[in-house]
Length: 330
Image (cartoon, rainbow, N blue to C red; front, side, top):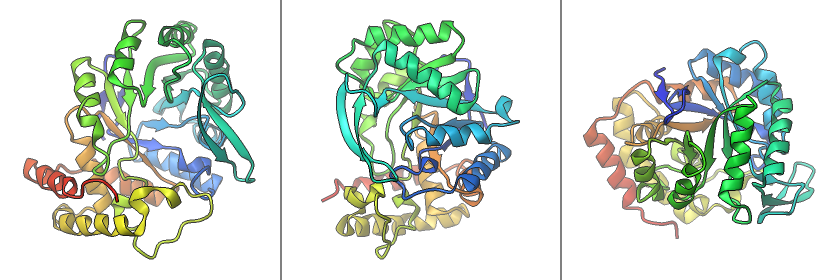
């Protein structure tokens, strides 16, 4: 698989990144750790060199699983994790209430205070069982903490050799501009898919102008763009998708109809609908990589094929117009 430069950093990442949110179990109806480890190692064997995780994914569990999978292959992997979502601190912006797999409620706060970042980094290093984190990202902005203070803490970690590069996630261009006044940014991680194209208006142009890499999340819209989430699909208790607008029956059918219209393109490339959706994203100007989750080796192999063909400009345009015609979920 090709490698792409991540902004101005010295990191080179694959266009498909292994997303480790689902293997944390949280919000996705549970997971099988042994199968998850096999999936990560299969991803590396298939040429994916970047794994994205976060403490918030399973309250540390995703990082622990990634750490197990990295044994013996650490030198082949770029490890990306995050800081800034805390379930055991309340001195930041309240974000939401989450329930763990034992149905215990936790108030989640966005906290990017220097002492919190340094504490989180040390905990992540331990859970991942690594000496350095390659890409350390602020998960969500914290308006209670000056950005200069946040960036100062991150640069301290970089000087100490605990992290190699700094990134952000879900930051606006104005926030990123303020970050750049204090430290270099390797990347931004926003949501982007055929059903969520808002970043085209501001984030993508800003990142292109400032040579900031863009690693997008949810390119399959939590699986909806695979075409496998049919009208009779039921979700397990605690699954995030239960209350997501596009997954509601009236909207789900509209998406399935749109996928039907682009199926001939998938067939022409001997690809699945999901692979076409990913390919569309990773070949959008300004996008460096797309994070794609997988729970098992079979899903990994399917994700890898998404980077093994190239949509024509006409196909890219037709796919865009097909999904633009959907408008917003009702």
